[in-house]
Image 1 (cartoon, helix red, strand yellow):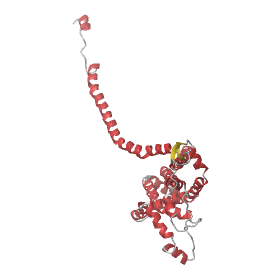
Image 2 (tube, rainbow, N blue to C red):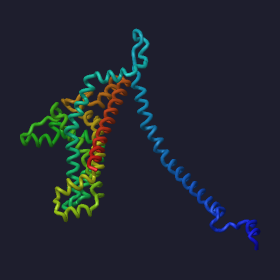
Image 3 (tube, rainbow, N blue to C red):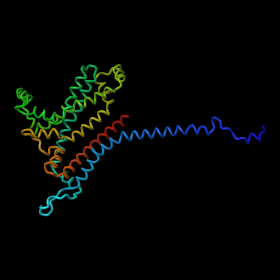
Image 4 (cartoon, rainbow, N blue to C red):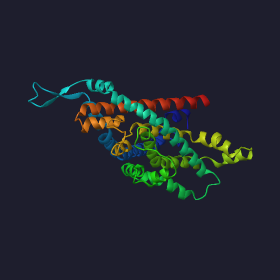
Length: 331
């Protein structure tokens, strides 16, 4: 065969030429694309109910509250035509911020947080560390006993404690009086500790379970190595365990702050007690409730609710930023 015939002869595609590779890649690409499409379709199908419920239960009410806060009702003329709804802009916000009762409610919340947050966080951490220690016995029983009050609705819990706070009815008050301890749970000095006690009784076990679950996820080899190096129980608890569950601590702190700003059920029920110092505007949430259902001023109630939400968002942002900065400084 001559060199000229060899040059004219078409090359036979071998196993490494482009044609077989193209025919081999085409089904793989189509399979990959179909797999991605099915994954996206499944994710969309699973997330659609959540976003639908989130829109109906969260976005729509918040948007309606914002819209409602911009309007107010005013009497027209001599008042014979009844009230009419008019656009008021930021007037309801100015009214709420200018009301001394609304501002005093935040001072009440500040005092509540000063007592409640340290007792809640410290007590839950201590109990969780005790349950996680090697000396703990009957852990399941104590977990259930601590968590059981949280399973009781807040309204029922408040009613139970109203009974325990009421003189001539409560065995607790009778025992205190027999021991020479006189304390009025409904007085102006006793109202705040009474409400803090109800909240602690209901939420302490819930946070204990969260901390205990986080402690159970800690790598035991690290704790064993610290024990071998001579670290005591206190050193292991505060130098190893607590730093490793920092994310759970921050989460509980955020939830506790937000829950404190939503204080409503306990003081509302306590205000029904005999001689109680709790008023209808004792907390910001009670102020909004009173504006809506006692004064029928829904615009003012919506504005107060929006202001409470903004304060909660601001505090959450501050706590998150501070914890992130500490984490970055240590890293």
